[in-house]
Amino acid sequence: MGYLLLIIFVLAIKNTNCLEAEEDFRNCLSQTGADLSYPSNRTWWYDSQGYSIPTVRNPLAVAYACSTSQVQQLIQCAVKNSVKPVPRSGGHSYEAFSSLDGTLVVDISRINWIDIDTESHTTHVGAGIRLGKLSYELSKYNFAFPTGNNMTIGLGGHLAVGGFGEYARFYGLSIDNVLQLEFVDWQGKVLIANSQNYSDLFWALKGGGGGSYGIVTAAKLNVFPFPNISTAFILSWDTFPSTAEFIKTWYSWKPWDLPDEISIEIIMGTNLMTGIYIGQDGQEGVTRIIDASGMTRIGNGTSLRQFSSTNLLEVRAWLYKGGERSGTDEDYQIYNVPPFAFDSIGVSPLPASVYPPLQPIQNDPRINETHAGSEYAVGPIPGLKPVVVSRDFTKYNVQYVIKEFDQNAINAFDYFLSHGGFSYWTSLKGYFGRISETFTAYPNRNAIFGMQHLLPYFDLGTFKPSGINGQFRLYQNMVEILEPFTNHRSYCGVVDLFWTTDPKEYMPRYFGPNVDRLIQVKNKYDPNNWFSNPQSVPLHL
Image 1 (cartoon, rainbow, N blue to C red):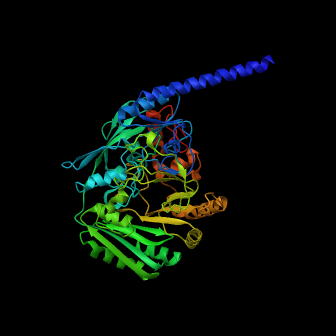
Image 2: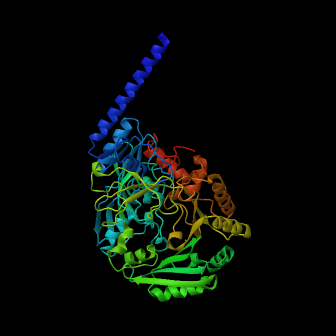
Image 3: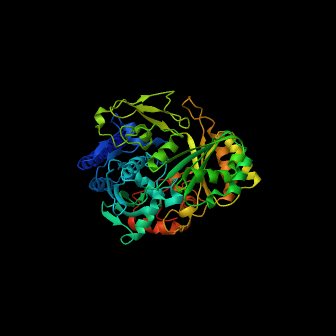
């Protein structure tokens, strides 16, 4: 009996200590001035999960920082209380690495200011700015910055993985145009990293993976004047050619050897080829290039649509909207700027107390068919469209191709497409490909085209994943058969636990020849591994 009482007494002490530690942690956070969210908040699901939710996460708290000084204090609170801080700028991690169990999520999406210098063609921005807002604000001065095509992504995370987009063949990746980064380390110290100061850190922060070193809070970027004329185009087929015929024509055409001024993407699994051309001959040039490609001579019922403008933002919007243009502000809704902002995580001017409770929804037309599971809508919020937060049961993967497929690879890819898979093929090389693999931490410069595979594995409408094992085997088989034709690497911007959590496997996969140098930077700037996730840069292999 005495032994039982002793156990009860010890457990009671431990529970008291845990409650006191939690109270100390929360008291410390409250003194930073950042807006805070805890599991008891009505908006907790929304705050804690981020933009896409392949895996439900359970952090201890979410803090919305509005300044670098708040980020400093939040990191110090976390470390003081033995809690790992996790940075989040947009929350788009494919494996939900921007919100981890038992951590403090430091959301920087409110650090979204922008200061444009038209004389030097540079801009200084908060790292939480969304790519849409960045593009939109730059367009007011006829400037562009190379980014990916998802306008709700946060700049901080985008730079951490490289920042690939359709401008890469013209201007390089986002990271190829970064001049300086403001960085907060595990001690809460601010470091200004550039080519002269903390140059090793500056190198690693450009494509060396998210959540591995500290938190970037601001960036100085090189921006580009709009081209004199820009042209977007969409080539479609009534009947898409066979997979074998298309792939053979693709390799015969070699779009990766075209001039830097054109970027081309094929959406395999649909009947579309799209691109942007910044050559001076505009639509005439596009027609000439497409006619020479051989693509219009395969399949049936090809149609080439084009749109040209001196405003690159308009051209991009036309392309993203599937070749539609209203001639009004509605064209800019894809840039996720008011009044069209649909992802208000961390950026809504409304306090958390006015958010309505989450309500489960079904059969909502706003739900993309590649997202199923547990869907919830937040709304109506004045001035904002309702938000769909969804469990994502789609598998993603990126491979970089360096040589021509054989018939076995073509057959495997055809089987993948015929069983519900999709793949985005993007022509590479150009300016992007002439940069050394070790110039930045992002290494994949030697490929001729990239492939991003998507495989949904769910029963649409049932909100339950089904057939996962069979679909995953299909995905795995296709990836492995294509592997000999690639550079044996992937993109850390599309993190994939398919490559396991063993750094001896995923580090070379993501970073190629840059692995040892990244580990050295990790040991120098985060020696106690405060910033980590299941596929972060480790202290050693």
